[in-house]
Image 1: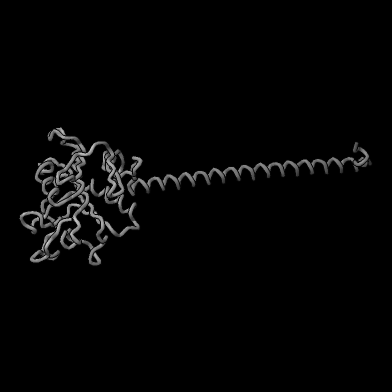
Image 2: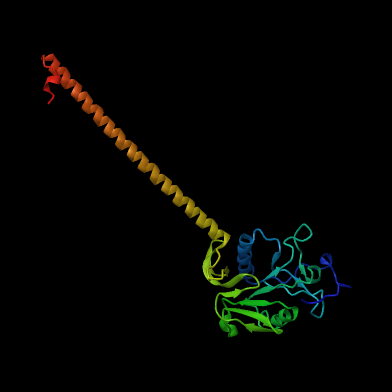
Length: 267
């Protein structure tokens, strides 16, 4: 943990929420939004985490504490879910009990963003334990892989192998997968459990719930139709029995009219 001196360091009211640089690719917002949405469902009962999206992270390990680093997404553990009874304008390490993000995500866009060098060096100096670079469209340009997950070991980032990669400090894995979010089906980043099963997005959970409800409705309708068929069969049998009784009564009346006791005809 970095030891910050609070003397002469600005507070949240003095600092902008980001570096005001617009993203040039919608995925830079959507990819971390998917991960955050899943966490909101998974950790709904936890209040010790914060996930920021395109938010300035202010730290005192650079040349100027008033200049933030702005990840596309980041996760901090051991901090309050909501700060000051509201939302954070930015993430200021020295006002967060000196807790730096444990996990940072950068989504590479068409515009070069120094994800593989300058930003990596900043995150390493800051002490971010896991650094994830997702490059779905331009990885060949960079001569890299579409997804790289690095762990800070002895001050340097070491590339981790495999996918999804399990992160024990978080209790989740991270990797790619095909799915649907915001009505868009494509490759996204997802959280995974330790067995390699990916966690669904809220949209997928809602879809599965609708499917389950529809299946239950269809099963109930099938059962209703079966019960109705059984009722109609019983009614048909009752009507047939009534018809047979009436036929027998008419026959008995005819026999009586001819002076024949129907009981005498019984075997």
